[in-house]
Length: 113
Length: 113
Image 1 (cartoon, each protein chain N blue to C red):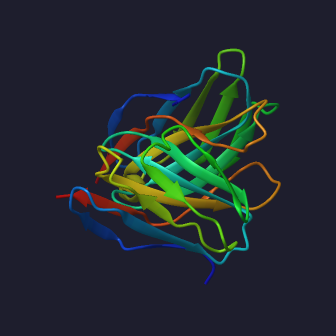
Image 2 (cartoon, rainbow over the protein chains, first blue to last red):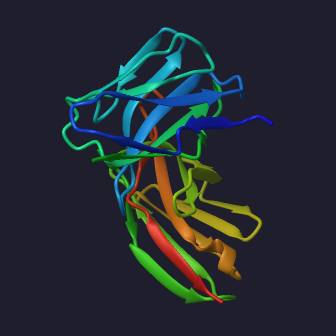
């Protein structure tokens, strides 16, 4: 089955720790995205990558880092510099061309203890 | 930054009734999309309307776009309990080549059996 997987589904972090959220897709999509969603709100763009080995900051990149070493993978690291990391994190991808319809993973809920 | 604002924020209807959600945006767009999100899940793409289109249908969904008013509406006809979810509009800015999606804050729809 083609799709996007995110792991883990739930993640707990102690203050001061870095954590890495996984996002993998087997849709052969070129572009991948990371969004943050806070309760009752829409999605805000953290980082995006249109091709391998290249990525750009979104609207709320501070305290986050990414890498894009493989087309299929776009991991997100939430660093200790992110002051309020508790949120729902969504990964998405899209194919080249088209109208930017995005396919989303199931999300990771991160809670800081 | 969030370009779209949705109205109402929450909507409760009886099964079989129609549900209408509205989205307003601020800048010129290439296209506008609607997504659905079930509680605690990822987003699912529903329908896309291009800036040169005024109306589009897909099953029980009808989307309209008024670029002069910078607004769109999503109509779900003959609603079902399974339609209970949050609905988000998302725009692709007209002059932006980065292919970012900018999401609204969403409408929470409850369909009562």
